[in-house]
Length: 496
Image 1 (tube, helix red, strand yellow):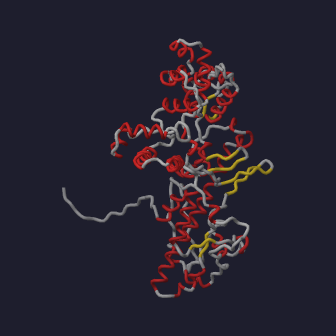
Image 2 (cartoon, helix red, strand yellow; image 1 turned 180 degrees about the horizontal axis):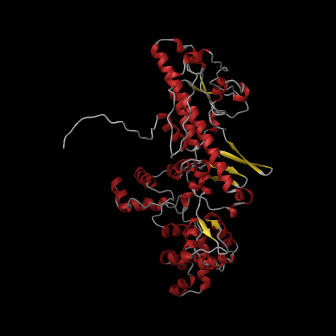
């Protein structure tokens, strides 16, 4: 066998991930808040970009430069190239992606800047307004459980060694107000005091507000609260210390048999226990609420639905006019400005492509889920990503990116785009299917109408759903019930 060197021509196709395509994919999968943060970060790093107040409608629809300034409001057009060519934006799909056909370097940026006209830059400050509150009056911080306990500790005027141990205990509490880790002996070792001394400090802390804080277990927390309200009789104490599992299952008969007490006495003690707070620290939770801003709005006009992108809160990007004169400087400055111009142009274009794709996907969802938008969640149909991908000629991965952490405001409420994609439950009467979310809604409605003294078991719910032509297994009902955060029938039962 001879070895030789020769040239071979081979024709092949491959996916070229250009920096521009990578940027478009990255922007597509960002949530709205992440997009706002990224745009503001780009504005800090790229001096060419600035937040413009004027839109394309104000500056002139026929002026391509004005449309460039309008940023996110209209489609961005490139300035005229020397060879009268324009590069096409590659659509973000998984099937194929085309790299830009013409290099952006071919654009005559110097010519473009010379003919560029822009509105005056927005002032970097806001005029004073006497009606607005002062900065000091708007600064606020929610009091945490640790802050509340430390304040009480400082006001108690304890000796220095007790205060040190108290600070260590408070610093190790969890969000519910419990001291679960580390053990009290370890805290005593760290403070270099006897364990009995640390126990004494812990007992004093357990008298702080909120009542039940600094407990080491649920039973200890409930006992502290019971003693505080003067309800720590023998029956209640034994129920808390020995029968928490039966209390959870509402198995009062077993408690009465074990304690040899009348069932009425057990009921009365259970009523008192139900008024106690098993998580005293939740009142001082510092978790911030999660606000949802829809990416698109769906409006119904007559018999038609229209999808409108939500541009509120997004900076309206435009090219800064300050660098118009700087382009005629030395070669390094000119090269730097041209590089930043290309980066700014691709950012604006990628954001516009992102918005167009979200609108396109939402319009396709409306096509498949029209009955939901008109009648409500009970009419939601099964839908998978592939169906929408085939409808708008995109790849499933693109649809997945678009629908993740994106929200739509509809006549039925605000939903994540992922909400409309769910599996189907076959009906007993015909070959039609019902969406799993619609089945969950029906289960929730059945439980809401049940007799609380005789709640529906999972098997009973199966039978009631079968009467509505929905055939599912008992384990499926149990799974949907747990996803809805609904307790089992034994824990939902009300005896008094």
